[in-house]
Length: 442
View 1 (cartoon, one colour):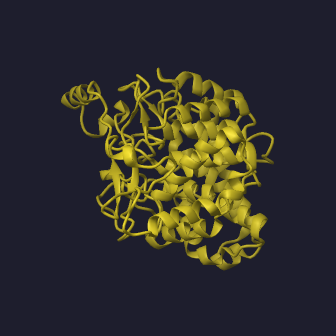
View 2 (cartoon, rainbow, N blue to C red):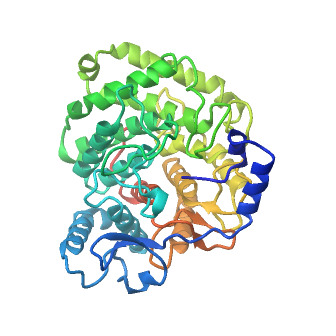
């Protein structure tokens, strides 16, 4: 979904490819949509600024639809979030409702949220769904979270891999993109977080319905890291470009996943006997990967690659998942100063950040990276920095109130809106700052 990194051009050839990429980057980024809403057709549509003028404030349903269903479902969704919304200060409710509605319109009556509603974004990415599931659990909708995780279980391959993205209706991949290894760790984190929030709010929850997902995911994680003794294989991460070295965008989520396996082991004493593993061996693999990560990425400044590449916003995966000093016992924890330094090096003209140092083509701020850093700051206890990012995101919504994928160098929302990953990050950040009930990795 993220495109334009020079680092990935090596996968398609140099020379003329670089020239073409730079020429494309010089063009203004198009506005593909300012929001998504149920329109006069009765179906969801990606709306431009003109079409969105008729959309009521704080709504993703056009007025006077013949079918009352969308308006009713939107109202019921917001009503179910009202208790959580009531925990927020008045000045944050508008942003919170925007993020909730963005997530709702991208998931309503679908098995899992799609990334966006415009063209190539209208697919389910496991990474985005993981964050969305956590967000929905945090606002009091754990059953909806579980249903989205069950969807991921249903589309997972027998070998434990996930397609980079799948059609929400067929569950099939639309192309032959390489599987993205980060999905494994992030899905495990989502299961652990949703289980912890569900247990705290509604009582003990049964992980058994996700045994297939947990078995396949953990086995693939162990197999492709030599049970924690090596880094994951080289492949694309959230930048979605070809790579010749393993990236922090894969190694970080793998660390998060291993830590989540530790949390799940503590939460369900019968888990590994059901899955055919030995709990002591699982904990040992998690410890071994923490050591592997520490001597590679951790020993070399947490750059994009094990020993080079400069800053990468993927560093925020760690604190966003709770790997922070005050909450970590015997696990790798990120220090606040390191995250703050990365932000300062990646900041863009409009005030957000780019994905990483190697992302040098355009001057845009990317809201998935920016909001993930905001969540990281919130979990590290740097509330003022998290608040300032929320302020920036609120100020840079589209004319329809949705959170876009990008903000141009001039400060204008561009590309697509809404984006489910950004909306989920905003919701979790708000919960960390104001309504947090405790997460699995804490």
